[in-house]
Image (cartoon, rainbow, N blue to C red; front, side, top):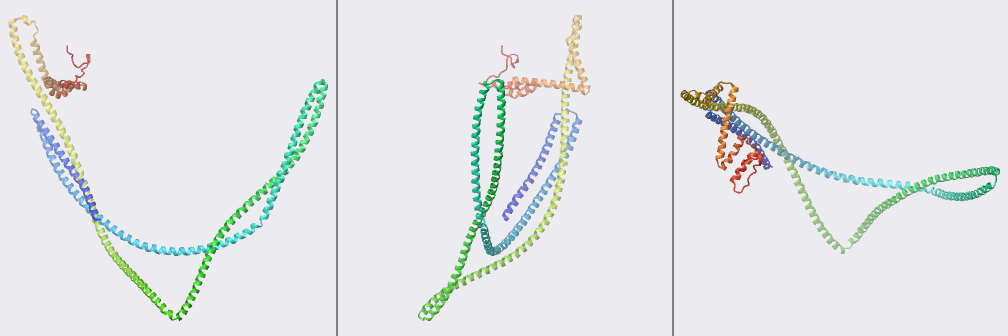
Length: 620
């Protein structure tokens, strides 16, 4: 356990040390970056001072003073940063040391707590085992008692049920003849209703046959009547029809009367039959329901009787077994009495006494051996009890020792907690110091950032000064060139006046070209002098013109170099030509392809286009 704790502490200390190392590396990297930035700015300033040697002395002195102040500020900041880094490293080392001690203390407290928990668990297990064994014995006793009580209660309930079922059987036997009489009456009523239905069907068939016969006779009479009417005159036909009508009305009245009589008789019979059928159906339904109830009750009683008989058989078997046991016990007692009497009789015989003595001696030896074994077992049990008592005493002593140790460990834990609280308070103070240091670092960074911006402004000013110096140099060269040209023009003008005096008026008629050149040169000189004394707008235009001339000279130089150099050198100049001439990407690619084609042995010629859009002039 302690080895695992040590490994955990090592792992945690390694993980704590790593970020401190990374922080120190980060701080050192920032310091190196700041120093490299200052060194680069100083080198740039030195180069600018070298290039701009022909500038103003006041700007250089001002820049040197600013650089010196900035260098002093940078040195102070670097010293502050180094001090802060050292303080941070010391604080982080103290923090790691405090965290290690805190973790070790926490691990020791955990170990003590685990030992305490293990000891308490063992005691609880022992107590639980003892209680479980006692509870098992109690449960067994209560279960046996409950079984005996349940059996007695079941016996009493079964006897009571048997008595109730016998009374119900006797009561239901009285209803059996009534049920049989009702069934006979139902059969008789069904037979009588069936006979009535048959008679009604026969009478209905006879009536239908008579109706059919009458219809046939009516048809025949109608035919005869029609024949007779056709043979009579009109008056006779009317009289015959009137008589026939009267006869038919009489017949209809008679038929209506007969039908009403038949209907009344039929309706009375139907009503009586329906009432009888409904009464009988009700009686049958009631009888069937009672019969079903009786059958169900009989079935239930039969099942209950069977169960009770089965239980009675069981009880009888149990009673028989008990009686058999009692008889056997009585017989054994009788046999024991008989054996005792026989032994007394046999004891009277002296001859068999010696044999009995030998057998008794043998039995005695066996019993002694058994006694010895029993004594040995008792001794072993006593020793085990003693060992158990000793173990209990040792356990109690160990409990007291552990309690003392736990008290000591608790005191130590309380002390460690107090130390931990002190350390946490120290940690909080150190963290506050860390926060203050971080705030100072951020302020230093802001100062550094401002210094960087100032250095950038100084660099831009120095660049502007160098560009102005270059423009001044170019203008001085132009002035020198103009002065030389003016001197030449003055010499040419003097020679021209001498020739004019010699040649006369004929030459005076022609406009002199040298005079025009002198005028133009004088105008240019005046323009340049005016440009020198102009304000910001004229100076800007003149500087742009000068820069255009410089770019044109540089372009001419590059093109001449590109045309006169070899293919390998020309390949490096393609990009410069493209930027100066403002070529597109396709044109630049075409230049590169043509150079590659000229340098290669078996390369394909690039497509220069055709007609007006061609990039090259075709050979004539």
